[in-house]
Length: 98
Image (cartoon, rainbow, N blue to C red; front, side, top):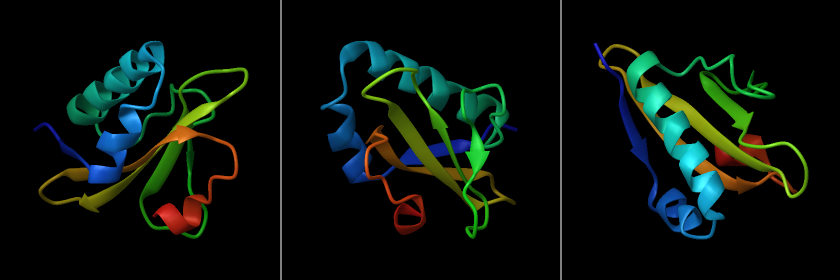
């Protein structure tokens, strides 16, 4: 069964500010989240966010500025993921986002 992947309104707005090449990479991540689920260990710097239950992040690129995506599992039974942030890594407070 596939996962339902939702984005907050803020993420939709943030997507519009990403360079086009990173939008494509982010869309590939969304596709994987939908098909495979929230654990995406093949992505660069993927990790669970410490102190937060079922919240994860990964880098979309190397170099600077570095772009990241943050998502959380809303419901494990009916398989819902919510993407909470996409944007620069700079001064990102993962715990506040999740």
